[in-house]
Length: 213
Image (cartoon, rainbow, N blue to C red; front, side, top):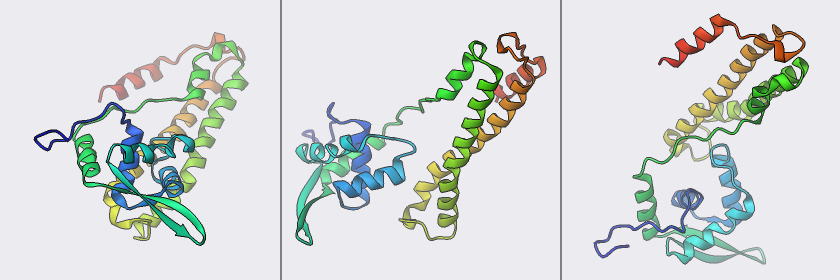
């Protein structure tokens, strides 16, 4: 905190640090519970290795943004972390900043970008795998969406916040599936040697129209 009581951000804090701090603002957690909750609620938008997440609460405690207490579960001790008032100030300061946009990491799209060095069958398999990814991911997404729509989701009182990410991933999975159907139709028109493929002028114009939003 500064002399005026304003939070001064530390270079030692990362977006992962603040994600953990945000979870601590919901309730107190053990490190094991934090990793489970991080995977359940934030894993799709901010995937991080569990080993790293085990270090974040300790960092927050060292900076005075969280507190640690030892509890017994049966005969086994465990450390439970809670947010401090300084931690809430830090979280509020971080939330006041707009943040960065998404970073796309899509290996199948990279493969398709160099499809002329493979076969048409290779490209079709890659597109099919992308469609399967979208459908598989949407199974759990659909179940969660129905659960919250019925008023029975975990932390239902936070549904207003959670549905923002839920809507994004619902549209993302649908977009990937629709794109895969479109890409498959395009590739099926290619000659056996993808190096001889020619783009459909109508499709190029349609893409340009969609881009003009």
